[in-house]
Image (cartoon, rainbow, N blue to C red; front, side):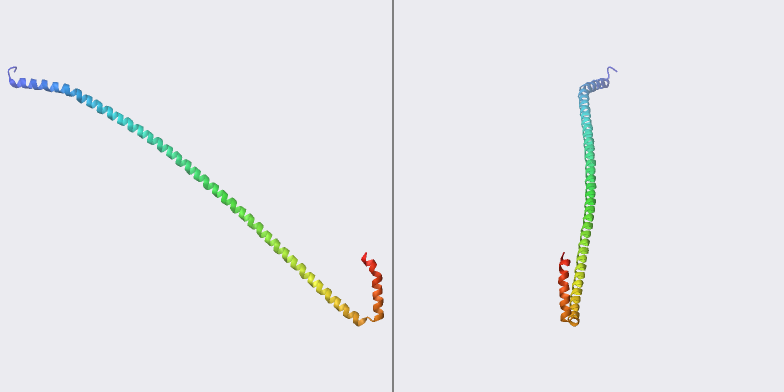
Length: 160
């Protein structure tokens, strides 16, 4: 067996493989170690990016909630303002209607008073005219003088 060339070829080949494996193994192992470190660094960076993304998402969700709350507050305030304006408008309308009604009532009362005064004036005019006609027809000169003198005597008492 020591004399067989195939044996020595196999031993040489085995030594060669072990030498190459030893030399190449270091570079392969260092390459694998480097690749492992790179992968670990990428994983760490990916984890950091994921955490940053989650923090940004949480911040945006907070901002969205805050914006929704603010929008709801604005809508509620607008509704309250609209209700207040509506109530104020109804109150103003009611007051305006009452003023107009009072003005109409005042104008009606004034028109009634004018009508009553016109009727009285007309009645006085008719009564004076009728009295004048009766006096002219029924009173003679002597009787008329007596009535005038009597009225003159009563005049100072009626003026005071």
